[in-house]
Image (cartoon, rainbow, N blue to C red; front, side):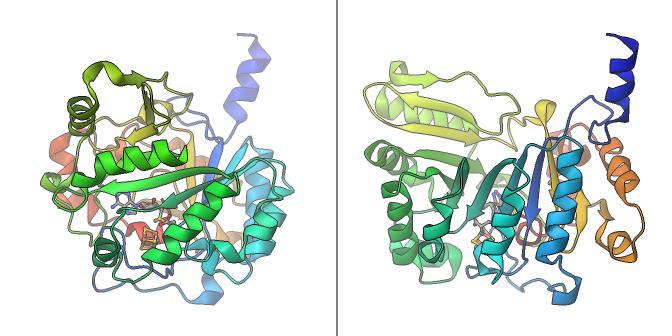
Length: 341
Ligand code: SAM
Ligand code: SF4
């Protein structure tokens, strides 16, 4: 490598001590949600940050701009439920002017009100969550009676030709008996379905016996469709999901195997919470406040660099199963609803 190339590389504040370049910023816009998914929102709720301490649309734009200047080329807007923000349209249109790829994660309940401008956004990709195809079970897992809205809106997104993925968190004994139905849904509607291994966060009653593993999913698929029907796709750069299709069907599905087969080697993701804290890993409870220095007019790029340099290689230090099973590790982390998946 030429000497001054190395210098440039070292100067990049988004490269961690393992050489991972963080080019994908995931911004949580809000802590609140119109669902109460039991694996995400603790039964007793969470203490919400007062509104004045949440990032405004201008602050989200300014911080995003700094990240883009330092090499971020993809931004995801998430939450809580991002579409609950009254200024959501303003935020996405502003962030879009930064020229990155842009994506949204939503539970889809409100999406029909936003389609008119979302369809004009170039290269927009949308992930929606749907954990069951059964109306009663939907209410059981989300504690809200919103299945019809969600399902109809997902069909609208499919019909509208959006670049869409459906996220399904699998929980043993709850929806693992719907894996084949979701694969058929994927084939019928030509849409990517991604199964997510259930992950531990504060207050979500995680235990490993409730997690459906990548191997269990693949074995089930092979025994149902025949082992020769499964086609494994090459992993994309910085992949999250390992992707598959099935011969003679339109089905495309992925498995996000954070628990049994983590993909930290190629991690390029950095998270910004709605109250302006940087999280260098989904599982890290080590947060750095950048909103306060920004509001005080103080520099904060070095803080971003510090947290990137402190990033541990695998799941914020939970690098083996024993640690993952130890509640002391994940109970100190925020609940997923306040991180943004
Ligand atoms: N409200 C939006 C939604 O549900 O898509 C965006 C926020 S939600 C926190 C983002 C993603 O995190 C969703 O796909 C959700 O299923 C996932 N998620 C939440 N808690 C999880 C957990 N304990 N394990 C795995 N995925 C989880
Ligand atoms: Fe809300 Fe999404 Fe969490 Fe469900 S997964 S409670 S929809 S933030």
